[in-house]
Image (cartoon, rainbow, N blue to C red; front, side):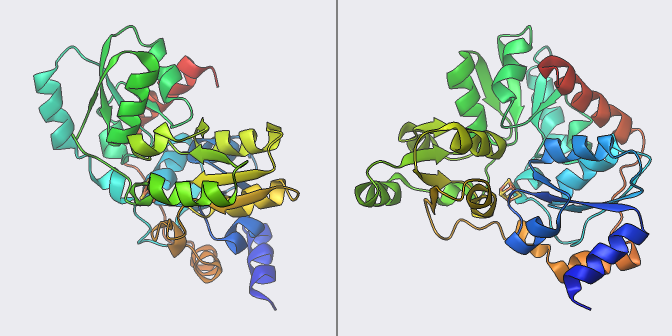
Length: 304
Ligand code: SF4
């Protein structure tokens, strides 16, 4: 039996659903029940009342959020080594240090953080709703982590003082994009729309026609009359963009923009994880309850 068939059979027997982040390998996206960004996927899992197991093809912090929001389900991460380096950049000690310096300032954390960090913040946000969350807060200054590029972008958009914690947290994949390479592509495709993720640096954001999260890019690509897009985010998104828009052309702004951690989830690992019900992601109490509060506060402020 083909590996895909074996996975689908096992999935049915075990009442499992497979969720794949937009940055997953094409073959992993193709067998998933849902493909999307981390919060979209966690919410999908909440709607799947009959599912007993969630196979979350993504990285550690996303599986943790799914486990926090779906305490009655078993969450499996196909590769135990799929860890986001940016999430590791913000430790609880670092948050405590900043809280001492700014005791009255709210702490807003990007969902790309570990549950232990989320437990120490007032509210979470995604790259899609960071501006909305910070605008909704009754505060002119916020501590924001761990991505300093997203912090800078949110400061530009809201006019508030957004202090990055740590000072230079970053996504190694999004730092690979440079305007010079985009310029070369623009000469070849002069009508192309340049879509840039807010985790990219300020120079990249300056040359963007559209700045947005992966879900916002997918929406923009569908709605825009443009036929060609230069895309500055992890290469996995191209599979979804091409599938959803077969008559449009998508070009990666830098060919090496691959997140090695996301790519650790293979079909083989998904099959083994489902078969052995490994690697189970759990978040202990009281961390889970505190982190859930921060995620729920985000849903409340953004009404979704
Ligand atoms: S693309 Fe960046 S933020 Fe996303 S998992 Fe990879 S390193 Fe982390």
